Image (cartoon, rainbow, N blue to C red; front, side, top):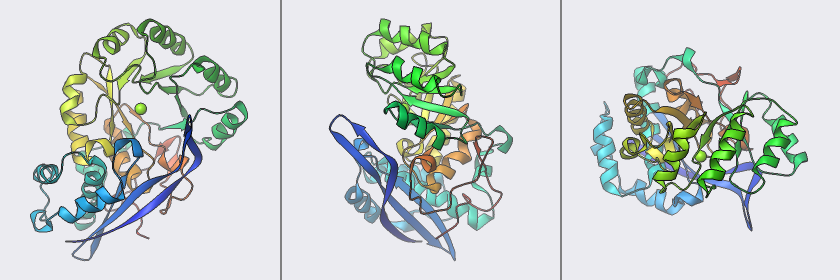
Length: 337
Ligand code: MG
């Protein structure tokens, strides 16, 4: 197996701004695994708050002894091996895991979604996130998100109701809300949850601090709509902790270290009767299609990378009726460039 990798700056269509800090791109590590004339594509999306960067990614890749990752791939063993090389670093581990799945699909002539027994017909509609902005820009963003049938909004500030009212003056599409741990008083939070439920909001992510189990549980028990743990649920071992606290979990490949562990998280969540949202970071077509391969196993999808970025180096995946299309070609279905 031969590895090559290159850093890439994935530009955001709209700068991501919090207070004095503004981010215009996301650092991505693109990787390729070459084996028997086939190439597996992988990607690490390293949003700064998760603590990975080009240096940590390159250093991790250099640690891998590829003779330990023999075809046919044993993903449980590979997960253990990569996990043992360094603690954390789920994004670059995800890049390796995604590339291995793409490669295996190409070696066996299998579309990746079939490895997980995903049913194409069960693909959920995906939401597209609209960042907080002035009303005119919100209108522009909603129009950019035109093909999406669900809009996601990030709340958790003083102007939550104002923002929702602005959106509701432009569109009546169903909404997903992400509070990103921004609410600090459980009574006020529940008030907002009930107000949002009446505004055709389908789910709410992470209402309060991820370490505040008691208040998140209190809200979940009283909420008429699904309360989803995101920041509180990173890896497989977090799924059990979410049961009883949230109605569901947000699975992301860049948190779960790739497709294999994401699949294990989905299976465990189903055993625990937890709902599942599959989400993403700022990602190219590679990680978007890797998540889309698992999305039919989930209740909701929030896979909007290609909508929010301006220089995806790969062709955008097919999108129809508000859903990503899973092509019947070997691997992830992302053409090599
Ligand atoms: Mg979230």
